[in-house]
Each structure stands twice: as C-alpha cells, then as structure tokens.
Image 1 (cartoon, rainbow, N blue to C red):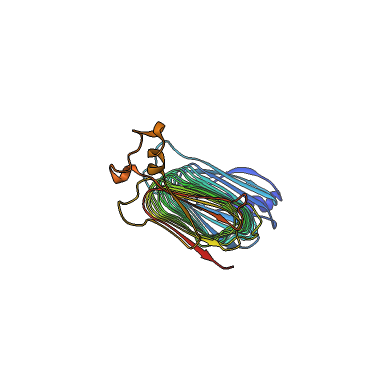
Image 2 (cartoon, helix red, strand yellow):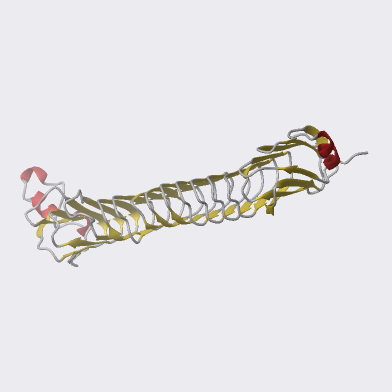
Length: 386
C-alpha cells in the first residue's frame, strides 16, 4: 500500500484533496503561501522553522484530516467524533515566510516567529506567539494572549477573563479583553483599548489613544488621549496634544500636557503640568474633583482667565494658593448682601454652605479659560517658565 508521500510523487499533483492518517502529512509550498488549518478540537503547536514544506501531525486516530495541497495555498480541515476523552495536539511545521490562518474550536495556540501575516482564533484556550512581521489578528474566547513584536497593525481580543500582553506594534492597535489587564510596548499608530476587568499600560503611542479600563491606566508619550477608568488612577508622563480623562475614583496625573486638558475625578486628586507645543493654540483647561486636591502648573506667558472654586472650604484655613494675583469672592457672602438671595446661603451658618471662588486674568486675558473646581479639597496654582 502506497504512502501519502509516494502517492503525491506518483501523481505529480500540485493540488490534491484526500483523507490522510493523523500521524503525518506534508505539502511543499512557496514563499508567501497561505496555510489554513481548521481544527475541530486540539492544541495547535506551530514550529516556524520548517523549510519549503508544511508538515502536520495529530496525536489522535479518532480525527480524520483532509488536505488541499497547493504551492500558494494549503488547507487542512478535520472531522472529530462526537466525544473525545484524551487531549489532542496538532504539531505543525511551516516555513517562517508563510501566512497563517489557524482556527481551533477548543484548545490553545502556540507559535514561534513569523515573517508573514497571521490570523489566529480559538474558542477556548490561550494564545502565545513570537514576533510577527505582518498584520495580526488574535481572538480567543477563553484565555490570555501573549505576543512579541508585531510589525503592522494588530487586533487582539479576549472575550473571557484573559490578559493581553504584546510588545511593540508597527501600526494601529485594537485591543479588547472582558476581564484582564492590557500591556503594550510602543504603538506606531492609533490605540483603541478597553478592559472590563483590569488595568491598561501602554508604554507609548505615536498617534491618538482611546482607552477604557476597570482600574489603573498608564499611557506613555502619546499624540492625543481620551481615557476613562471606572475605579483607578490615570497617569500620563507626556502628551503632545489634547487630553480628556475621567475616573470615578482615582487620581489623574499629567506631567507634560501639550494641548488642552479636560479631567474629572469623583474621588481623587488632579495634577497637571502644562507644557504646550504651541503657546497660541487652544489651551483651555477644565479640572474637576468631587473630593480631592487640584494642582496645576501654568506657563507665565499663557493668556487666559483662571477661575478656581471650592464648594465647601474649611472654616478658617486658606484653601486656594496661587503664584498669580487672584481676586477673591466668597460667594456665600456676596449672595447674603443681595436681598433676593436671603435664605439661600448664610455666611454665618455651617462653613460647608459657603463657596469660595478666586479669579485671575493672565497677560490681559484671552480665549483660554482655566476652570478649577473641587467640592472638598484645596487648589494650588503655580507659575512656571518655559
């Protein structure tokens, strides 16, 4: 009885459809070919150090593998019985320069480095890959994702409580997990990421970053940021453009804000150091904390108007500090001098019923409105030279 390899040689076929035993199958391929595998179940272990051919080995006699073998495209599909009690492993050897489209309906995927593009999907397992030069999509419904450098754009998704960890990405990044953290290196494009059950750490991004997380968010050097956390801190060492951030409970810290800033926290402090790319750009600032302190560093050449307000200042302590001259107005007392306002606010009543507000005009004023507001905390305004 002829072996599969002998049959291929005898027929001289460039493409053939047949049933093979699970032990071994081999197909010669050209550079840039596409290898597609659809496994009904099993762990896919991909060795990318092969030469000129694709080899497949399955450690189960219960699975019938079918192959379409062509120089530019190879496909492996399989049929499994209704019940499999043992663990199934697919050992796949491919050249590094082929493209990979791999699916398993129940198992993990492990793969080495690849010079092509890759699409990897599993219904229940983790995915671990090396460096991939081409565009990459990795989707799992039941595990974590860990990847090396990706040369082009990447879409990584885990619909379970799995974390996502990836090194540098050469294009845009689309990252989503239903219950784990997200960690990346430098992204050479736009970033869209959300984690329903963990934090987000992005080392840096060359373009816009839009993120939503359950806990802490860290974003390194970025062009523009829109970040929202349910219950964690938002930290950014450097942003070259506008920033919009919101957290229900946590601190917000911007060490070098290059554009306008809008930041809100329900319970936490806000720290902003303005470092505008262009002093004549739109540099409006709105900082609001429910319970927490606000600190802002403003370039002395900036034109605009500062309005600082504390809803419930302490009884005797000074709560607004500024390097710029401020004109103070105690709202409670101003209202009490208006007969129509009697009974609304009593300056002699509870200290928490009297609002404190301070205002300053910078360099003759301008379109840049700097609004600082906290319900309970202090406000500090510092002048800096740039």
